[in-house]
Image (cartoon, rainbow, N blue to C red; front, side):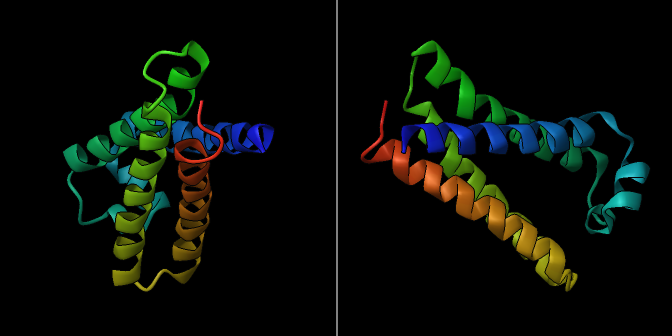
Length: 123
């Protein structure tokens, strides 16, 4: 189970790293063109979401690898769950069913990591 959780952590970190970097370094117009849900958001809000995603990606991997403050790994997973709930609500307002399904899948994976790392497979 520990290996499975590490695979999930790596997968989630890769996804969040990719979308976080995009939100942090792409102009708002390009992001809104690819993801219309961001049209009403300011560039600053989009950047803040990107920073939160990058922090979550780092929190999934770095504490566990370094052995320093390992409680941050499951807390990062909980943070991802919160981010995905908020993302699902934003997509729900726009009736973007396929994007809601995508965020729910990420939410479920993050919830599994949080459960495993807080519970029976903690570091």
